[in-house]
Image 1 (cartoon, each protein chain N blue to C red):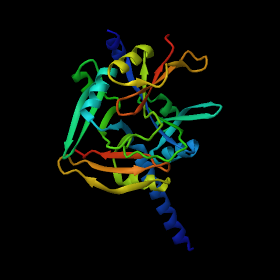
Image 2 (image 1 turned 90 degrees about the vertical axis):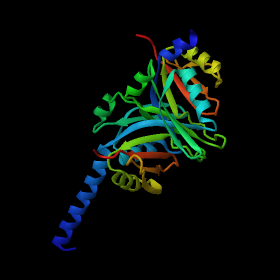
Image 3 (image 1 turned 45 degrees about the vertical axis):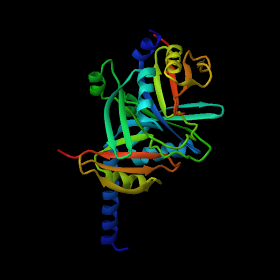
Image 4 (image 1 turned 30 degrees about the vertical axis):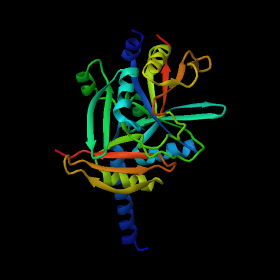
Amino acid sequence: MSTRGVFAATIAACAAFMLVAAAQADVSLNAARVGGPDVPALAKFYASAFGLKEVNRIKLPGAVEIMMNFGDTTEAAKSNQAAQIVLMHRAGALKDSVPHLILNVSDVNATAAAVKAAGGTMQGAPREFGKSRIFIGIAIDPAGNLIEMIQRPKG
Amino acid sequence: MLAVTAQADVSHFAARVGGPDVPALAKFYESAFGMNEVSRLQVPGVLEIFINFGETAAAAKANPDAQIIIMRRAKALEDPVPHLIFYVTDAKATVEAVKAAGGSLRGQLRRIAQTGDVIGVVIDPAGNLIELIQRPKH
């Protein structure tokens, strides 16, 4: 390759790197999403079990997506800049063992009780992770999605 | 009262995806989206890698936003739900970065006429779907 060719190739490589770097620099987490056959019912579960509030809703022919976030009031949830939780329609049964949502909770037993009262179940009782004083529980929403709950030591 | 107490103290810590090769999947997210490892949980039989956005590892560690956790999942994914949704400023550039890192684009990027958003779904090497949303520039 000529010197000019090498120069051109170097410039192209740098441009490609800059393109990738530019993409990397401007990506952020908007939300985590789970699915279920009855989206409004699933939203009610998340509101009742975890106190999430609906902050937005997209209606498309034959489908609805509900965006939720934490906040004491709907207004507070709407102004919450943290990543949302989005619920979408999924017709088929879930075949995934990964808990896609991970929530910090201050009282895992109380939240587990709230999950059950809202129509969910627990995958066993919450238990301590080793001797870390961190307690972890796995909840299952009515659509079968797994939700990990983490209670960290106080203080 | 119990439920109210629980509700008041719940927050979003992270979103999780899985794949057969956790370190390789973490490298994909680092390369495609500029994420950095912030911690790792390694006990016998378990490896989880925690990653977040930030130009450096230190910046990612200081990022208070929800993390992404990568865990091992042996089985192939059979779930049509994109569990991660990313905001991007240049969807085409991000798709190129995804492809360069070993991922792919499902279909094409498309513009939503009503909002001006550009939306696409990319697939990581483990089969997890990730939705990309590019907001219109004002």
